[in-house]
Amino acid sequence: MDWQFLGETFLSLVAAIPLTIELAVTSICLGAILALLLALARLSGVAVLDWLARLYVFIFRGTPLLVQIFLIYYGLGQFAAIRHSIFWPFLRDPYWCAVLALTLNTAAYASEIIRGGLLSVPHGQIEAARACGMHRFLIFRRIVLPLAIRQSLPGYGNEMISMVKATSLASIITLMEVTGVAAKIISETYRAIEVFVVSGTIYLAINFVLTRLIQFAEYRLSPHLRTPLAVTRENAVTTTTAGEPQ
View 1 (cartoon, rainbow, N blue to C red):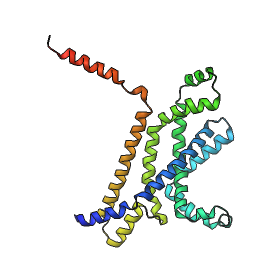
View 2 (view 1 turned 135 degrees about the vertical axis):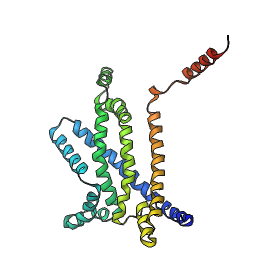
View 3 (view 1 turned 90 degrees about the horizontal axis):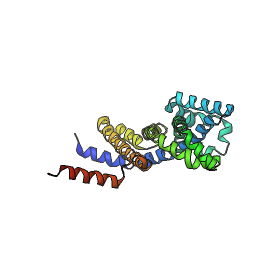
View 4 (view 1 turned 60 degrees about the vertical axis):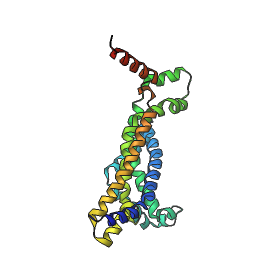
């Protein structure tokens, strides 16, 4: 094992981490907004909106992300209308093509997660809010959405981890994120094992931090599941007293 080469490879790949994180964060944030709109369309009761949302989810969940990236980056430029539109400055940039593909893909999966969270909100709490005189938007903002976020967080956390790993596909359209830099180093040194071990370790570290953040968010959003400090101290005192000799 060449530790000097591993160290040099690590420094080269660390420089590409900001682009990887930027791709993941941007696509996750934009995808969350689109996913919420899709979930609301599914639950709106309007047949046209429901059908369009179902079709969207079916297409983007049923086709590989790699194919979607190719279609957006290589396919859209073949249409003259797009090349002469206001969107062309963005669609000719590989970064924005990658963000668009990742956003559209994660929105399809996340919409089903959010829809499940919205459906899990107890109907009794909604009825109680109506009895208090809350209007529909206030009920959604104060009651339904917070509870749905808490219920959806574990599943959505898995989707966020998947998106961090999916950013590696952006390397096929010339973006030099972690996998792109790793592929460049391999093409120059032909030492694939060492390079991929280092790149895999970097992805593992990023996802480790992400899982800890998700767990912290779950903890903060579940105050009803925490043991009150007073009760904990009381139990400790009771246990100590019970263990003392008579």
